[in-house]
Length: 108
Image (cartoon, rainbow, N blue to C red; front, side, top):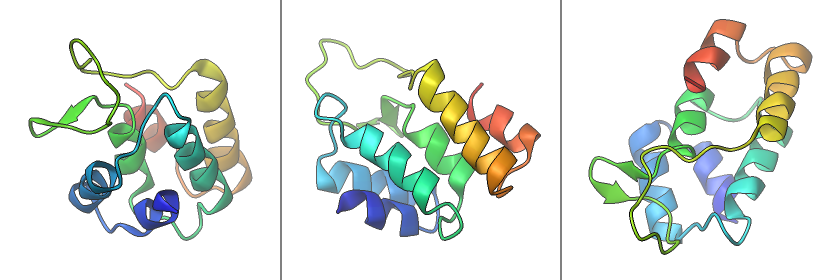
């Protein structure tokens, strides 16, 4: 599964390459699977805050990340309040793999 490979990527550049190479789509629920995988495997995930920023971007270094067909690729793609809350609760409160400031930095 591409979500597992994405979680093991050491930095944002490798993670972006995985998203583009695997053809991850927002409309098919691939991004929600990534969010679910981050919550389940947060202890193993490297550079969590960078990956959270990445899944909210439409493009990275001029390359369209997701294979969805947009008329104009948005600069920021919101993940929704519910997903944001569940991520905060899991990563900051329960597992404590991120600080509150790191989490706020991932969601400007």
